[in-house]
Amino acid sequence: MPEGRIVKALSGFYYVADQANPERIVQCRARGLFKKKGAKITPLVGDWVVFEAPNDRDGYVMEIEERTSELVRPSIANVDLAVLVFSAKEPDMSPLLLDKFLVHTEHAGIDAIIVITKADLLDEEDCSRLVAEYEKVGYRVIPTSILDQRGVEQVREELIGKLAVFAGQSGVGKSSLLNAIFPGISLQTGEVSQKLGRGRHTTRHVELLPLKEGGYVADTPGFSSLDFINMTELDLAQAFRDFEQRSDECKFRGCLHITEPSCAVQAALQAGEIVEHRYKHYLQFMEELREYLRRNKQW
Image 1 (cartoon, one colour):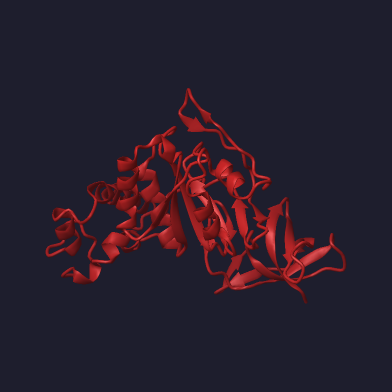
Image 2 (tube, rainbow, N blue to C red; image 1 turned 30 degrees about the horizontal axis):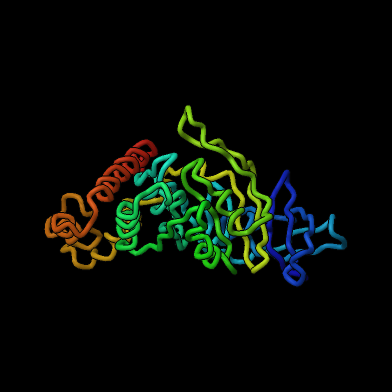
């Protein structure tokens, strides 16, 4: 039976790109129940599947292959790269939201890059400081500008051959950036509401858009939830790269870097090696997680 990738899911139908001929899209339904480690799963956009199809409209998904990663909201599987897009201005960048996105991509095991749009609105010193702050943590940071095309080619090279999902603040120019990288790509573009200071959502369902150079970009309605679901306190601590890199130096195994003595993260914070606002965000996220666990009687 042929294999392919689900590129769109809508109203109970799964649209599968034939691996042997990716331009051929087969409309399929799911046949039977699918299980992973004993639990029932449903097909997701991004899944590699085995299907059968007498024609292009009456196919069936027969088998779902092992996933390398999975996101819940948006529901998408096998993401290779998360492109976290934040604007330098209009709206102002939110380090708190960026750190929350980074926690979720780390927990999901998905590589992430940070793209700063509207970099032309920052002076060089502020831009360099912002880039250095997250490069020090271990992330690739690309300042971009649609006006002078700064960074556009660099982002394009990151996307080739991968399934990439774009996420970030509303109204930061995610779709405009993609249209600059791949002219003609059929993404809708929202604008920032000057009154509210935030963007209007323009996309309603998940769909993979093929790139001529190879790979896909996921056109999604964005991350509708950034709650710390299915995460433990230790998961959260490990999702901060700059903490995890020092955890072996902590006195206690499983150190949460809050009140434990001889904590390497606390020492690095005092020495100025960890950015203070990231640690404050960590404490805020930990409180959110503990509140969630209390509500669900897990803590």
